[in-house]
Every structure is written in structure tokens, then in C-alpha cells.
Length: 314
Image (tube, rainbow, N blue to C red; front, side):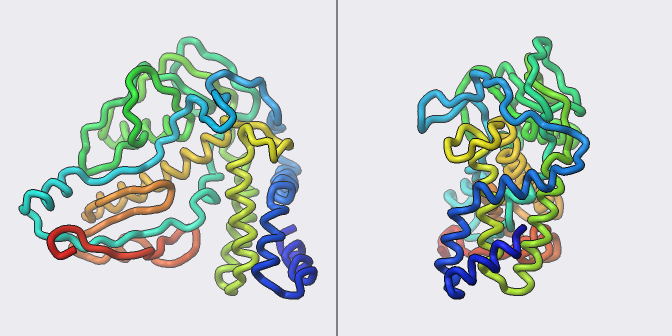
């Protein structure tokens, strides 16, 4: 369902890779949904396609946002920047590492199977997934580590999705913070395997394309997973699946995956300088990052995006 579509598109455009990629991107939504449905054949669970719309999952305006926080990263190491500013540290050489296919890897996430049901007493059940209400933003006391729920600072209650809650619970187990205090929840029975076969198919096809230098297939696969995640919410361009809860969970899982990489770098003695979006990890240290992470373009690897210097030598 991937290679045959690519081969046909190449024939239709006489081998013109640029035109072929554009044509494949235009077909990405229906082709992504067809591939997803094919990977669900024989699955243990029949997921709800159009669950009841909940107010906090609905956009307030046509181009606006709903009420869910996703843990988006736009963080920098405050103490390090202070040292550079006051001269106690003259300069640092920074490597910017790039995560490969972040949203493809994020398809491995705990997804609610059915419609979300209100649990007025809150709490967390690892066999369920959905959206959780916390009375206030959890406190984070580690200036050298990025806040796991991102940079937003609005006061009052916060809605967090399942991927972010599981990250906070992991942080608690690492003795980094208190467990999330959940006062209400909207959840369903869950599975980590709903999109897992879909992810494996895309990962295998992407790996083959990377190893063979097949740029057309690589770009087509990128369009499939990125447009799948971005259109399963309230998009008018995808009418096959309406799961804004899944969309938020996938996005937050991508942010969480980057946070785990940052924490791994920190635990191995590297200094985190900045964290950006789903895929940028800025680090510095006295030894090569390649001793911590494997370099390459596969989903399990990181690649060097760029380098820069902070401080007087910049």
C-alpha cells in the first residue's frame, strides 16, 4: 500500500521526483486513513470513530484552540544563561540534535478505545486513557531540566491528556516531582496497540527508504504520519476519524519522547541548553554526545542538525 502507490505516482509523472512528491502529499489523507484501517484488521478492539464532542476538546473559534495543554517545549537552561551573562562562564559550544520522525514514534501511545466517560472523583487508572483535570499547574523545581508540561504559565485548573499525565507520573517515580493531583477525569478503556501496527509499517517502510536513498517514499511516509496526527481532531479535510483526544495524546507523546531524551542526556552528564518543539535537543558537555545516543537517520537514532557557540566567543 506504500510502494505500489509510490511506483504508480512516479510513472504518472515520468520520474519527476518533485512532482511525484507533491502528488503523493495531496493524496496523503485518504491514503493514510486507508493504511490505518488496513492495520486495524484483526485488531482486538473496535475503536469509536466519532465519539461525543466534549466542550474542552472543542475549538473556541474556527482557527483557535481547545483547552488541552500538550507540554510543548520552548525551554532554555536559565542557570546556564545566567552564568554566560555574568561572565562566570565564558562560552559553550552547543550541538543541536534532531529527532527523526518524531510523530511516527509518537504513534506508540495509550489511546482511549471508546467515548470518554466522566470520572468526577478523578484519579488515574493505567488501563484507561483520556483527559485529566488538575486544580493547578504542577510545580517544577529543577532549573537544569525542562518542565515536562511546557512553558505555559496561566493560573488556575489545567486539562492534560494521557501522555502528559504518564510523563508526570514517570517524573514522580524518578523523584523529580509530586504525583499529579487529578480532581476529575474523562477516560475510556485504553490500549497501547491501536496505532502500533500502523507505526511499525511506517517505520519499516521509512527505514528501507532511508537506507536505499529513496527520497520520494521517505517524503510520502512523512506526509502520511504527520497529516494523520494533524487531521484526526476537528479538521474538515478528514471525515473518517474525529478523535481530538487522540490528536492531543499523539502530540504530547512526541513532546514526552523528546523530554525522555533530554533526561537521558542529563543523566549521562551532558548539559541541556535548550529544548524546542518535538525534535530539537540542544546540548553541551565535556564528552561527545555520540557516547550517549546513536547517530543516524532511523527513528531510534539522533542526527546532528547544526552547531553554535553561546557567550563571548559567539
